[in-house]
Image (spheres, rainbow, N blue to C red):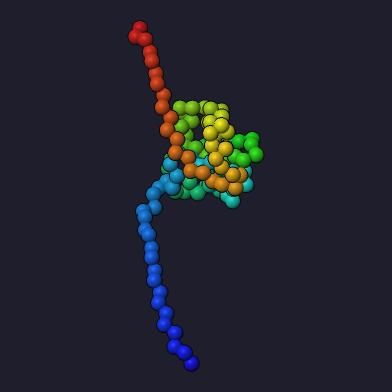
Length: 112
């Protein structure tokens, strides 16, 4: 009988789990493995940050979950348009995309 030499090597990379696990939102593809209801429930358990559901009528993008604070700065329609024009060409219907969205508002007002 032959004797075999075996050697095992383990390598691990550890990083801190950050809450919430998403920044500004998620773009869920129409065929993504999890839906907006399940993701919304998970987020409500993991964070006190409020997220809102923005439904999409599209063949690629199914739903958007976005921080409520963002929807105080832009309308759901503006968000939908941006997603269709800029994000849709970069994703497939089975994907889930993290959304890091910075909204800047400039206000010019004449003194009274």
